[in-house]
Image (tube, rainbow, N blue to C red):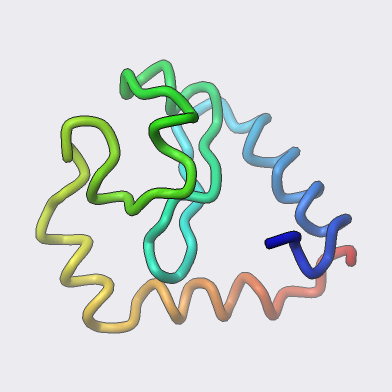
Length: 91
């Protein structure tokens, strides 16, 4: 599905690529949208086996940890996504 705001998506992607720490971008449903090269170097997984799948299934299920279920259950990710998407960024 193409992004609703292509310029905004490009802007976010450029930020993700420049952060020098491992960073992963998730959907509200916890599927991986993208990750930066530092993530792929730190956690030995390839983009093909990461992007588009649930975070719990990445690698050898190393992200299948209870804290994600707890955060998802209390709406943490929904609130975070809502805050990010309401920000006045370029469209």
